[in-house]
Length: 459
Image 1: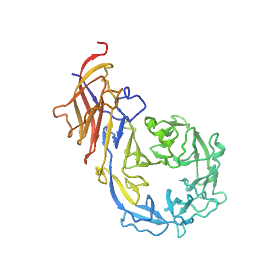
Image 2: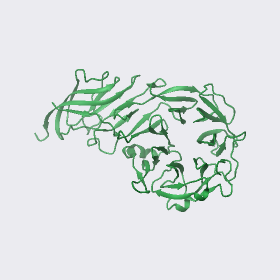
Image 3: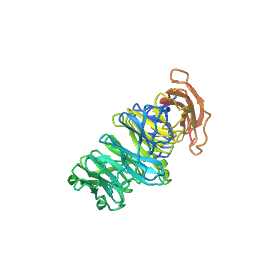
Image 4: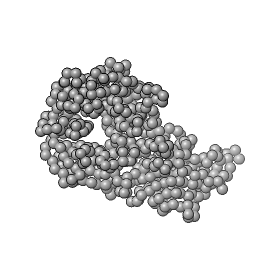
């Protein structure tokens, strides 16, 4: 009897095609798991509680070999991994959010948003932290390049003096980039990023690349691309590209081969169907590149849109992780990703198989397979699964009625050395669904289905 095997999942989550004609290595559901460089599906890391913070601080960043929070009055945390820095509160209303943090000349440079909505820049090199130069933009967008701090102000991008983050007025040293002159569409920048050695200035509908230098006379416009982002913090660098959330979905910007022209890459198109409705709902995404896992994370509420990319392994795969907590701030230290939710700090830990005691619900679903016999009625007889852990398997069998699904069957570990698991399904198409919630590791490498062709609809 014929057997069909699914053992290459390098396409990850992909909703571009109909469920009845999608490639078999592309998944319809991939929740709380990710694609490895071996093209298997592995359960994501769990949340391990690291620290209960003292009340009164906000934010989380990494620097000087530890994690840091910020407050407008003295706060001392009991966990030595987390320190606290005090900043001024010129509004008297209290700190709401730490928008962005850079380390500049071994000191923190940051933007704080206060409860009254005002944002202010701070440089923690002395007793008074507030940057008081009248030309400082005090906007939430900060970038460190060419020994200067850059920040958006209205329709230009201002920069500080070289090696002096407090001076935004020095003649022939501080100043602004006239980015508005190069624009034909939206004229107000939204975000600042880094592309290779250059500064990227994002607009809602485009992006500009600028060559920047400690000597402002050497600043120069390089080129642009007709795709941008309306979000201040949705971009992150991974490899030689910069990835961001555009109005069309997740995209990246690359240098076109054999030229210096920029082209936009639709890396996020497999999940556009999910992401586009979110963009219109007032989300505040924040993207980071997780060096310890080689993945791009975009945090939206308590969801993480995760992109795994490996040119060597030919893996380019999206997944969606859902956490039981809302993410307020993130920071990576020594290859570990830390997440702050309220006054609790968690670490994403591969050895933690729950989220601080809450089960991690993995959900995987393949497209409907016709086993390369279109319109032929088949009796599906048995399944073999190469995996670790104790998942449950079930089958959808009618794409016209996708709610029809068999009762789940739970099994333990690799079944290839055992008698095959029975399937009691007669259909032209079948879609495999697998779930896992046990407190253990889980990895899926292959699923094989044995079937008996019966007849086509013409007989």
